[in-house]
Image 1: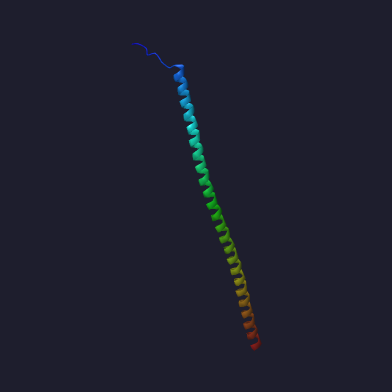
Image 2: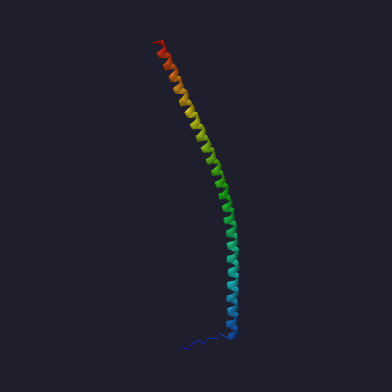
Length: 96
């Protein structure tokens, strides 16, 4: 069997090197474009999360305000109940 001789000339090697370099540049450009698209999407997602955080904060403030109102109402009802019991107990003692 006869060995195949390689016919890679300097010109062909230079051409291959240029093709590989061009492929590398195209890949870098493509990766950079994809990174820009991803960054834009991440910015959009981050803005959405900020809006959700604002809504959660407003909801939390409303819950805290509601809790304070319920607490004041409860205290008022307990004081009123004690006052009613005290007045009724006083009436019973005055009738004895």
